[in-house]
Image (cartoon, rainbow, N blue to C red):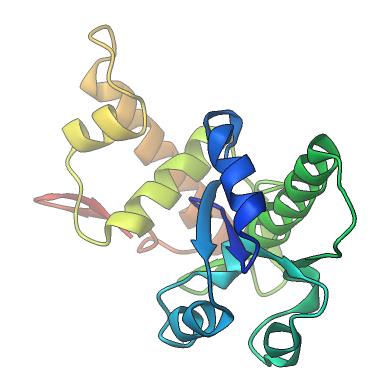
Length: 198
């Protein structure tokens, strides 16, 4: 889960308030003056609903009747005054829950990775991974094509001049060995002429 979004639907004043303090947020804000515009974007898959929450009026029947919106993703406001700090706390709690749920199961090939516990599972066989091993797997999966040692060095290790290329190769070697020993899988991470690939 990369960016998280808060979509504000038909509450212009709230959008204006949050826009003034947006630099303190870890999420991005989208404003929709009309519910139908929001639903159109949602139906066209222009919005990633899995990483966002929606704030709207309590009486927004079009939003409430939508079958694509999980009620757990909604914060419904009435017309009474609100404390902005309480609202921000509520937003942050919902986003943390969404991130946790997202990270509890992530599929790669025939494996399921739980990013919270750092455990990878295939059928009933499980293996504990390190943070760096998770980073390597996620990076290779996201790229989809072979990645050179230099790319891994720059992107996963945030390249340091003191880091030698054998550090990357050693990590990959150990990770590949874990998969061979534990799952009898020599092809989870492929070592190709162009680099490493999942």
